[in-house]
Length: 279
Image 1 (tube, helix red, strand yellow):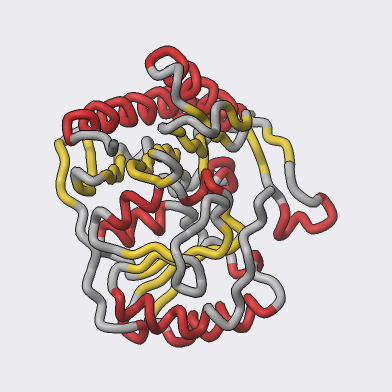
Image 2: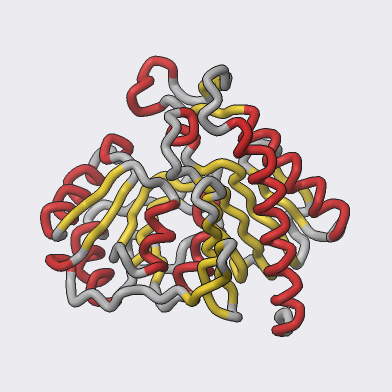
């Protein structure tokens, strides 16, 4: 049985507590001049595959996991830094403690903490937290809202009429390869404006209605699970590049505020679609 509204409200409050715990770890390290990082990527292609991890990533995830284990020891956890436990539980938390670590180490306030919750395999609750800006974009069947120290306001996507009027975003065009390059370029050229380097924060802007679509490739579960409830409960749509629901492994993903923008973008993107990498 799906969680009741009262249960969802309790889980939302707990997710906000998790976001604050992550912020308490990450914020003191943000813009620290002596912040150390290691590269998890391909050292021979540092321009594309520099994939840093810092103590902010690790410490924030440890803090989140400790609270989940203390309050919901029967829940599962899938985390970018410390792996998976109890993946077959009814409730599974999916964590990216610092999404946008490149932005983090560059001093740019576009990194976020992503906290998602699956129920029986489907994302039902998620948040996108940017603690430096004091913003948490929260979504569940109770609705999507922006939570700040001043209170909360509903989130609603923009009903853009089509791709030619759309503001879209992707993190880095150099992350695309093979047929994806042409598919992305066709989409980019058809749009009104494209912005780069925002990572998951761009998806938050789609939910808020200031951007109309965000697209990525090569996503993992922790990159997208938290985003889906925020977008969908603000009235938007999240699919893969052929218009199907996003699988449990991520892969090629687009989120759009309107069906018109999604349909036009998919006409370009579906020319290059491939299964998500399950690893």
